[in-house]
Length: 144
Image (cartoon, rainbow, N blue to C red; front, side, top):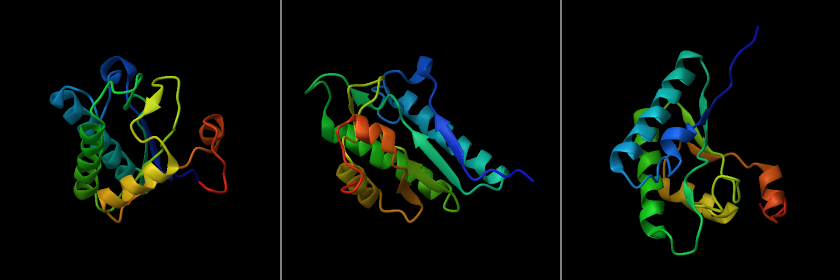
């Protein structure tokens, strides 16, 4: 029969256009974390073991528009909360260095994404590499 391997999470545009895990309003950030945890519970209910997170709106449009360190810390803290709440579920950030929603994603490269996973420092955190978006951003598959 048909089985689910993962739940792929997309944050709704109307609520999270200014960011999900990096939204300027802490209450909205917490709602994004809660939505991520609901996805993890859904994965568990489906006997899937992974939540793939595409955080389309966690970025910015202009250089120096945001405090980069604050946004980075917000993402680290959010994923740590999710990983700690659902240690049996793998969380995978589907980072995209460029997207139509934001000119600059808060996690701007494969190397930065790897650093993010290292700083989250949880065994159930990883990455999903979107080869198409990597190529569109001028990346090369081998170094990624």
